[in-house]
Image (tube, rainbow, N blue to C red; front, side, top):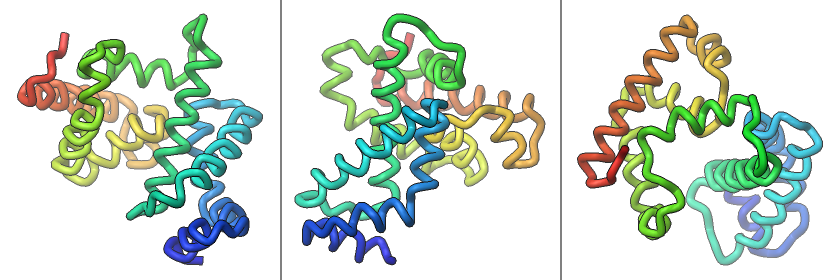
Length: 187
């Protein structure tokens, strides 16, 4: 079923919308949540929450790219669940490593001004990724959107782990410079 048809099912409040979404994008969403959470029980709960959030969001929202809309909801819910599950201790998973890598080049999330500028920051990062050569954009997205490990990325792109680590380091440096240019203070 085409995405437009699935969205129309949501607009008609037809419960088949969730079944069709799960059928078409269930594995995709599972991978996103699993890369962040790592626990199949948490992943299943996250997917249930994601489908319900999509149900509550459509209507009134009519996503331009349904797959991206679904991915963003799944990813955000998985990050929230991860933070909730690890509120008192720092885990040893890839997600902690990923967040630590980005910590140096993004503003403090506790800053009230940062909350107000979150959309603008998202736009700047999106523009930054779109300005990259395709391979670099794909590597950046695999790491910082899908939270894939360096080993997975190296295998996917036929690179050595060290090469991927260097590429990511350079991309973070470029992002930090871009954020400074856009007048975001980076410590």
